[in-house]
Image 1 (cartoon, rainbow, N blue to C red):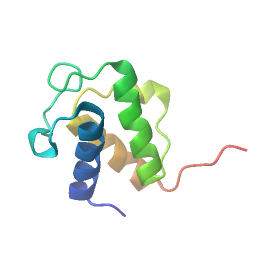
Image 2: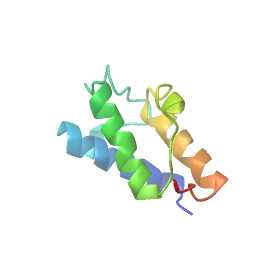
Image 3: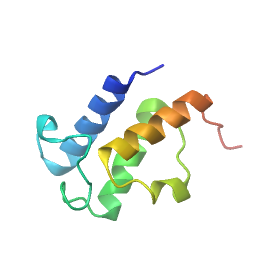
Image 4: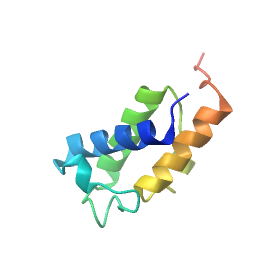
Length: 89
């Protein structure tokens, strides 16, 4: 299972790839829209990257509640603790 530092680093790398902001400048308290300049589509791209990286599936209703890097860390941890994602039939 992934630890919080690995989750954090994966999120930072994803955001950095999308925004061009160096990972070291992306903090747990960074807000996607206000601090990092991501629009809703770019934020969704981050979530999709994480779904592939951690093999989880985040429901759309939960995606809408994610505003910061810390929110994302908590969502990933929650889904990893719940076990492998169900694969659609």
